[in-house]
Length: 420
Image 1 (cartoon, helix red, strand yellow):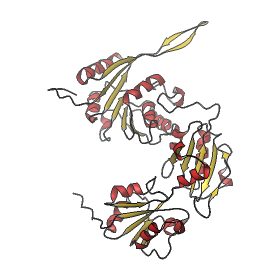
Image 2 (image 1 turned 135 degrees about the vertical axis):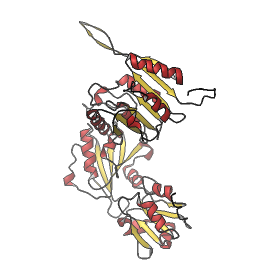
Image 3 (image 1 turned 30 degrees about the vertical axis):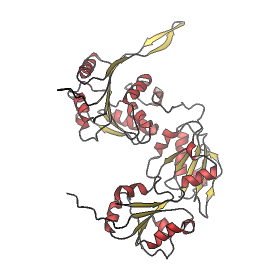
Image 4 (image 1 turned 90 degrees about the vertical axis):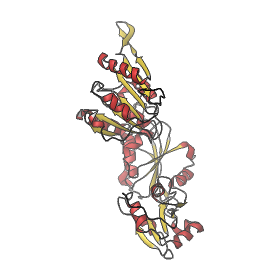
């Protein structure tokens, strides 16, 4: 059994602090910091406090997240104040503390995002915020759409250069960039606006405390990637194992992703279903299972390219490779349907309300889907797509192989002996 966590007699107080330091804090925040017996924060933040804050000062170790419960337990019974940059509940330490502390009191400060929007005259409701603190720069790619305004939270002084390089690589070199440093402090500075194509990091290494403002502009020869499923087939690197655009859009519609949900993509191929599942919302997660190591590496590249580097790729054949994976909210089976027991394993893994969608083009697998439809219900459809092609001097239709699709939601069936 896990030992009981010592109870905290005082709430843990989280105090947001900006680049303006002590003088920028309201009296309520100052009072809490003076009264604290333990002061925890980054070394830069601790150095902003005057001597009158006499509590024991502890700098966060690295990695930070595992240290949170340990430090709270080590100082149980004492008055703890934690320093955070700006608003602690906006991509800050407040989230981790809320998960670990018995009681929490948060005294926020204007965030760097609020300061940046004010300086730029950008309404916050029209801005997308992307954090690259502890996250790969590739995640920015999913937010790139013509005309969008982005505020990118930087990890360090090198982040603006990474942002510029990614914009150029993804065909958004004409995008306009500005870097805002030390917002709210005496050393606040905003760079002149330039394009990502013209950005030269070596000319302006800048301050590590910065935020990057981007106005997205797509180069004329860059393919347009929409915000809904059904990206162009050309957006993917593949060897022919690709769920094509129109079938992919219908498949994602049947899977019905919602924020925070997890997908199993079984028989990933190029990873297109998992990639577009994750692009529907930043909190959507996916695991792709692919037995071919060459294809597995290709899936990883597609995920990086299309802005979802968090896609987890599991090498191995299903159903064995599914063992130990976190329970899914939805499952897509795009390959390997004839593997013994695969559909049953996927069905058993789903919670109530979970969805399963399976596609096939072969008669053998179609028979399996017909049997599953008989046992579990759902919807069995055949999807057919034809493309106009030249026929001599005229134009005719070329029919693609029809796809049989079974989609079903796991629900409660009160009838005796029901297998649902």
